[in-house]
Picture (tube, chains in turn yellow, red):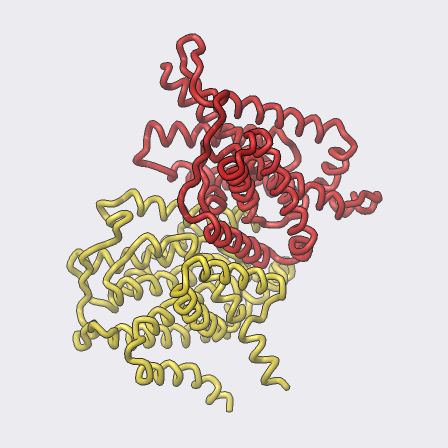
Length: 307
Length: 288
């Protein structure tokens, strides 16, 4: 029964490939958003550390993979790994700054760092293409076999495979002693420190892991769309990631995936009506989620299955 | 040299505006420990009320400013009593989500009724044009801004230092638990301060249409500026945020004028550096 429940989302994801061949770009977007939300879940959901600038790592990963592809190294999997490494490095450098400042100021430092990177990418047009985005990205076939095609078949299966592997890894992480210590920090940092958990170091590690995850998500976006733009670094993206996560349910891993799917589909459907319409309902959803408490879709599912 | 003085004056004027826009946030953040990213939305609402009153109904400018102040203050009062009050004891993630959501809702609503374009206002005759002082051309509106905002700074400072309400407010910011224990009506102070802060933001938004611009992205665009003022200025004085806003306005305008290629990067860097160097401007109060 448990295994069937765990397999269900992935069977749905594979089924969607056959059922909706004309919606594959949307499905890829869901997989990438899910990976981004997953990275936030590790940091916000498990370690309880709120960030407003997580798009910095997503965008950095996107630009790294994109620039590699543009400069003649289009091998996708090494591209993902390099993007992850660069994003993790940025995480490693900024973690002491963010953690040093304390809770409220730390929140603002994440916001400031995100905006700094956005502005830097905007001004460094020789490298990033500035407001026009990064043009001329060429990505080689995955494992030298599967080309990125016009319909987005390869893009979707590739994104889904990466998401699946990283999801399994995340599951290992959160169930490890390390993951448990993160939860202890979330529940009560002072007690966690009292029982001997090195709080700052664990938080820094979570921050770096989340940065690498976000970097891979951004790199996936750049590789599958063969394009990178300032959108990837925007505050809007950081905020949307948080919303997906809270919509799905914090600290559950599956919540990140379900939230990303629900969010992306709703975005697709509502913004066709009009952009203001979408923004309005997005805002209403945020306010309602904040006021009605957490749990999200996963919480609702749990309550249903418990009955 | 004269060009420099003109630019400097622009910087002072926009710093004063930033002060009026963000002083409410500095008090509410210190008093209630709420991460309110939606503070700029009250400024935006004030700006739009002013534009509608002035351009569509032909109300005189001073009355339009008053209308903007009252409208933003009322909106603040209603939202504080109905929604914000539920968030005081929640964690920061929920406050962040709530206030971003509020920004989206208000921004989309304004966009729906007024469109996404920049709003322009027609200033009255007595405020447009320039006057010469010792060979330096100064915009009349800039001088008007500095006079109005300077008077507000003085009034707020005296209000906080000299009045009974000010003393209660300072006590509540310093230590809410003890203030409550001494019988101070802390929830009522919350509501009053929130209303006043929103009203000031509305006034700032209305005064700023001409200087800062106004479109539905206003709250997000200036969010960082407000947060810097709060972070640098501290939460228990009027003078702290005032100095911070003034510096910010001057650096921002000088930067945009003399090194435009760097853009907003300076401001964001300054924010991060100041937060790291002086987290206590903000944190000492907020964490207590």
